[in-house]
Length: 255
Image 1: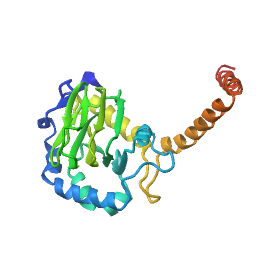
Image 2: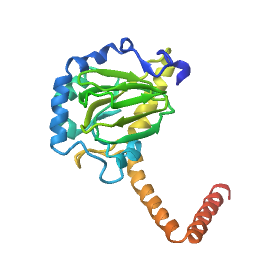
Image 3: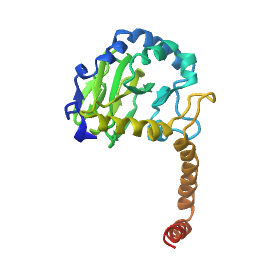
Image 4: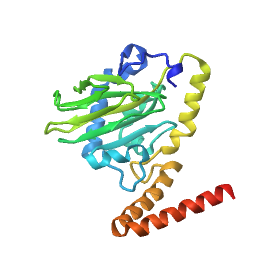
């Protein structure tokens, strides 16, 4: 999608490209209050049933989240728990995904990137350590969160985050649709998000619907865990079963 992007190709993007997002910074205390209430209610949490494909690798660090919107829909649990934030989001249609995320003291998120380039990542500090010891590093450039301050960055650049303080970092985390320089690219980006990325929807509570990719991921990951235990128990048996399964798949495809 880089070929058709209308924003500069650099790690951090100026807010002037996203004027409608200013509404969140203007109302950050309202969003903060609902995020803190969600956290105190125990709803900013890790996935409990291996049904969050997009962020599964983050949970082992203690990272937690509360989904508000995921591409097509607002989650019912979010409409109940943070209605004011939902109403603010409805005034910014370029936001495709939104959540509250918490990075606990001492946690580090590993280096990662999004290869698709369909969105720009937005962070708004809500309740943070307000310290340079708590930061995100994008392509080697650091940004430290501050309460009420926001930042846009290109998530296709390699980035990681660290909280080297004794205070939780709670932020408002959004995917903003990447501005495109022609209508066909814009249409394709929206189509991909609506029909593919939306399939990775997950839940905060049982009232929320889980997308087909995450329903499948739950079972695939269970199989992977069984494979890891089998490999630890008996490597020869593990590889024998693995190669037999590969042979069956090849046979089904070509014969």
